[in-house]
Length: 455
Image (tube, rainbow, N blue to C red; front, side, top):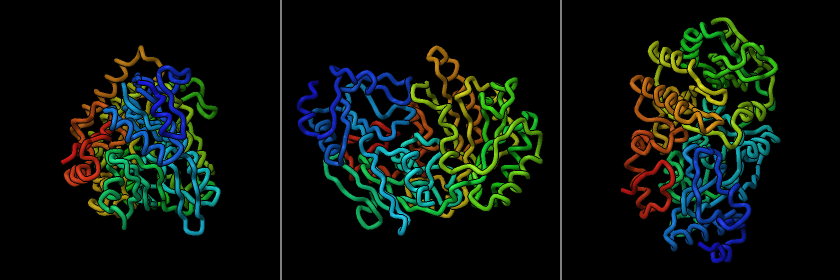
């Protein structure tokens, strides 16, 4: 396909297979994905998005939307597709008086946090700063602040959306309320969001927290203690238990690097003295191998894992929701996490109680308000030669954990082969989502996602 006709329709760049930049531009965050789109449109406005979507529909090509670009299944590209690249839409405007912020559809959480924390404000925004604001929010939005302030989507006030028929609309509680409901947890099924408006909350510049790595024999006691603690923990606590291979960091003894350890990742937004007492309760559970805890900027905590997750790794993930951490669940983690194959990989158990449970299950499309944890089995590694072994590790782990889990998993953690689990992953609101899909995208133009089929 010649890109000349498309270039005449947009003010941004259009990169095609004939261009020198194409080889780099076609690659996405997960280098396991090796697609060759027809064109990559670097959109600079909602009108550019409108033109790109309309051109794709007119020429019978798929639409792939690339926001922050972190999609593990590689939904931001496809063979012969028109890629709607939002990386030129990153403007962020903060209104500190009204505690709101507007963010372009291509903004990352690093950009968002830097802009809002300049005013001592933030909203729930993941745990990896290079994650896109758009993808995280549309799938729900779990992060350090969700126990205190709800999911990212719970803090969404409005969204500017380019629809499949080319219209540009604003969705909010007052305008297109059904679309607004669906955008809060229904993923990218309904249109291209070019601007998000969020509610912000006061967050101290320096939170209290960091990492504590426990000796392996403490794993059971650590997870059991956390499970009891988080039931009624102060909402200032936004941490989670995890398993990691010890990375080569200054505070980790060199002879322990590469070993698997149970980890406590903590974010305390209250008084530091109180936070120190809370974390001491965890230290008392069992022997600590290494730790790096103290006053840390919230922006630094939000980028703590970034060095382990550069663009270009191989990725294969699975997701489950769970209730209490029973002895059976803890045993599955202890068995499989200790076989973690790469230092980039991770197993995180994010609590989704507190303020998340304050919101009614049917108030948004994110339908798993009864879950206690959203667990991700994140296989990430550098060498494609290891793909088969590492994918097998994730699948075996998932198979062992699934019998002890609730129905479904967090859509932002789902893989490209999880289409058969879409109904469970979206939860009890799926049929309503399918009706909204029929209303706003009856032709399923936006199908490169965890896809909801129009009713």
